Length: 150
Image (cartoon, rainbow, N blue to C red):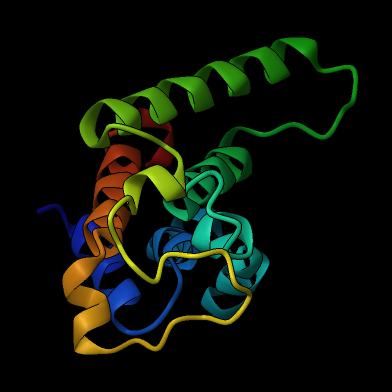
């Protein structure tokens, strides 16, 4: 496993949510203070606030790409197209490796993977039955392979 993959996995296992684990692994490259970086994406965990929509690790990848490749001019159509192309590319790579980019589909079969706003307790059983730590590692490795992250 790559350095950033290991870091993202470790952050998830420390209790950070899936999006925070990915973004936290790249905070330095983004020029962001670690605490601010993980705070900015804290609502994306659990497929956006545990709604089980787009996987938080994928949202984390989108955040990293946006910081590195994003634009601020609303008329920047070329930059917007290039950013969207890259997001679609990395999301498709994640989908190919994991079967989906949707949290509910990735957690299929996990009994307590509901969309209640109450976070699940981070127990040994929680970590054993969820693929989230490995998904965070996968997302970080996809980003690490991007030429623009360096």
